[in-house]
Length: 355
Image (cartoon, rainbow, N blue to C red; front, side, top):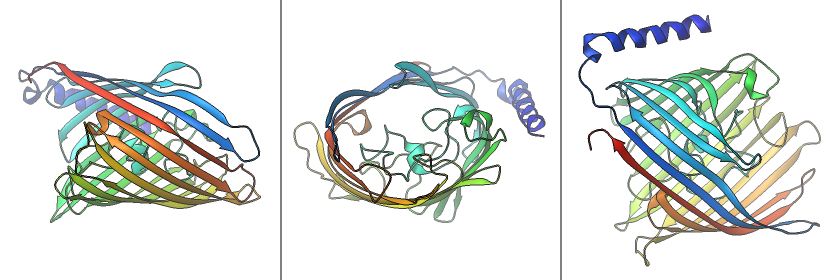
């Protein structure tokens, strides 16, 4: 049934592409880019030896463009530090008839939580994915899976609705099941809209946001479910105040530390000072998270406290962080604290098509 549905969708796209409506002259576009994240970390496990480490956290290459008015493609790669090699991050064929009707096919982020959608490069915090809560969904690499999804942006009165649903390859996820994985997400934006599929966890004062969303993935009766919240207000002509939170429950699907069942939540607050100091602005950020892992036994809890100071030079294209993180467990895992510095740089340029 799934194969017939995918074949029918592709046949429909080809038919549209061959129709006179889509045969109009169109100049293709191509944008290329790159992004790097590097850090220095001092990590001290309780009762163990400290580790000082310089790391290349990410090296990403970006390629995207429009083939016709309604058909686009995106190819992104990322460095896998554990294997010292480059891997496919995204490889997507995109059909977009309108903001309300978009189909993506290939490898990309399935519908999931905001943390997965913003990734490490568009996160408000530097120390992401260490709290046992955010972005615990199963994936092939960096949150991605192979599949097909529909997504659309709608407006209902003063509320903007963002919805997505898709079906993805289950055999490559190492979840113990070869059945397909179903994923869906619904987001409500009450102030400014967030257009497009991927998201940020801050807009550094470019938007006033009040957004709440729920997402779930299901495979073989096992589920991973999250609810996330983001509020951001522009303050004092160039500053921003941000509150973010999430609750997650992994019931046999995804999660952390090999636990088959877990749940937890976090709260984050940040303030971007409006006054520019030198070439950038200063941001202060604090986060507290608590999660519980209940299967297999014994059950145990994790508490994570993160304090950061960011120097935001050009939003997500140039920023520096100083961070300190304390992670404690009441059993099973080892308590640690860490501190360090992180640097992020990105650039992109359109090299084909009308400017």
